[in-house]
Length: 469
Ligand code: ARG
Image (cartoon, rainbow, N blue to C red; front, side, top):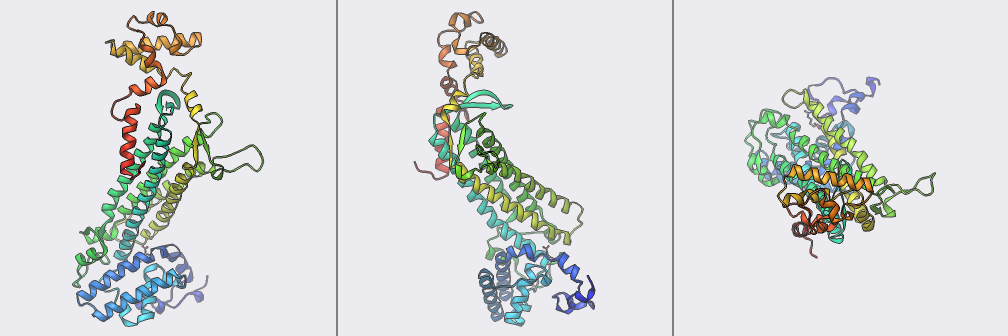
């Protein structure tokens, strides 16, 4: 690319000290407007608050302040109507808007950047943007929790095997399994709420890195923009991307949770399990095998966790070797962040939609609770209730399981006499304990799978989520 293609240095907002124009290759390599244009609304919101503060502090006149605010509103309307032309030679969203403002209102526009730098401005835009994104994610997480709670209500009473090591372990209520996801995504909501506290701090006023000598009023800007506090050290402020990394971590854990769920959905929709039927509208067929119905949606959600984790790793590595304060490397925070946000939001939405079109096969779930001696722990617990030390009880139950395997029968198909030959402590009431319902309903510890506990848990989840039944 020859220098003749380069644009005029005097055209740049920072062009004063330059005698040569910027190489076209440099312009295209360094521009961020292709992706940071999505910050336009928050950039304008921040600039309006800044302009009002400048006017209040008499750093600009009241009329200039008013002209800036109106000009910015007009630009926002133009962007939203799709009439605004973003110019790559103006690098980023900040300079595209500031240039358009100056072209529109003249000298007042040229006063907007008083007492601020793009270094604190980009930090501000990201914080304003991420506050909204956290709120949007919370809504999506609530939607997903609601779908789980509705399924838990609909299938209350259905039993299924609970697994450890993907081996049938103990019988549980399907609703208990479903409510596990409500808890999991509830932690994701808490984590975002906590992360939002650190996002919700005003960075503007840190200026380029050292603060400013102009009499700005940071507290006023914080109030205008709804920030809970004002950042302290200006150098830390302009260098800081912790809040972006934290958000990326929160997004990661959400996507990883969705991926674990997806893994179950893929397994459960296989012929081998046959526990669920995902609605036809949420599956695809094979172009070769006419009989196929594939769970592509959970597979894609599971697959997309790779790129979300990649985004976190990318920004960690970008920040790793950076000295204080702002370095242009930090511009590399946006693409991974935006991609992770888009991916997680789309994954949450499609998962909720698909799950609300998913049916559980109660008969298959129940059938899967037989054949695995899943009530062997109940047998041991029964002996413990007869005062046998747990280790010995475990041994007795193990020997009874071995016997059942030998003669190919279920635990509750053994005669009382046969069971008593392993331990005289066993009595007639053992059979109630060895039934699937008996086993499930005996697990009344807090957080356990007994129907009474699950009903209690479901009730409180429904209340929290504002579900009226
Ligand atoms: N586009 C830049 C970014 O995203 C904005 C800040 C640029 N500041 C600077 N002094 N070059 O990080």
